[in-house]
Length: 414
Image (cartoon, rainbow, N blue to C red; front, side, top):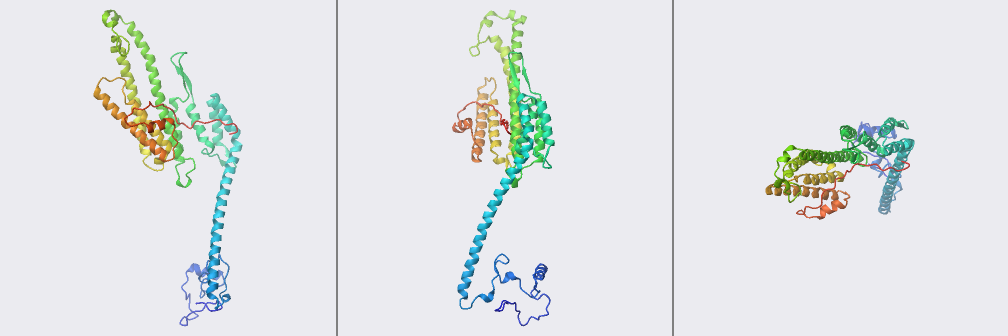
C-alpha cells in the first residue's frame, strides 16, 4: 500500500520484522538491494507506469481536486510518449537495416576489389579457351584470403566460374572429316567431375529459410540438372550424327555386294513411293537405320526418365516445389520425352494411337509445370507462351533443345 507521500505502508497485521513479507522472488530481491530498497518495499514498477522507460511521477504532486483531470492528462502523455517511442523504434530499425545493407555492400565491394584482377584473368583465359590457365587462376582464387577471411565462392558468382572451368576442361572439335567439324565445348567425360562439384556445394551450403537470398542448394540444383539435360541432348545428337556417318558405309557395302547381281531388274528399278529409294534398299539399309535410330531414342528416353524421377522427388518438398527454374526444366523434360515417344517408323495403327496419347499426356504435364512456374514468379519465353496457348489436342511446335546453364557474361571491371 502507498501513503500520500509515496512511501510504502503495510497492513497492520504484518509485523515489521517479517522476512520477505511480500514474497519477492530471488531475482527481485537482488534488484531491490541494488536499488537501495529493502525486501519490505514494492518494486517501483508497481507505482510507476512503464518504469524505468518513463519519467518518474511523484504521487504527492497529483492534487486530489484535479486528480481525475491530471490522471487523464498523464495517461495521454504516456500514450503519446509510447507512440513516439514506437515511431522512433520503427525509424531506428529502418535506419539499422539500411545501415546493415550499405555495410554489407561495402564489405562485398571491399572483398571484390583485391580479387578483381584475378577474376578478370580467369574470364580472359576462358574466352581464349585456355582452360588450364583458368583452372590454375581459380585455384589461387579459392585459396585466397581477404581481410583475414577465406574467400566465399558463393559471392560474386565465383562458384559459376568453377563450374564452367570443370565443364570446359578438354573441350575439342570432333567430326568424321575436315569438312564436317562439330564443336564440343562441354565434353561428356567431365560430367562426373561437374556432378561431384555441385554435390559438394549442395552439401556445404544447404538452403536456409533465415537467409533466403543467400546462394545455396536452391541455386545449385537447377544448374546441375540443366547441365545433365544438356549432356543427354548432346549425347543424343552425337549418336545420331555418328549413325548417319556409319550409314554411308552401309550404303557403299550394299552397292559393292555381289548379291546385287542376282537382284531382279524389275525389283531393282522399283522405287518406294514414300522414300524415293529402291525397295530392296528400303528393306535392308532403311530398316536397319530405323532400328538403330529407335535404339538411340530408347536409350535417351531412359536417361530422361531417370532425371525426371529425380526432379519429381526434389519438387515434392519446399522450397524446391516453388522454384521457377526447376519447374521450367521439368516442363522441358516432359516435352523432350513426348517427342522421343514417337518411333522412327511404325506401321501399326494401334501403336501410333497409343504413342500419340502418351505424348499428349507428357505435353499436358509440361503445361501444368509451366503454369506453376508462372504462379511462382517465373518469366516465360515466347516458346512457353506458345505451349500454354495451344490446346491439349494440338501437337504444337517441336521442342527446341537449349541449355539453361548459368552462362557467364563477360563484363569489364568485374
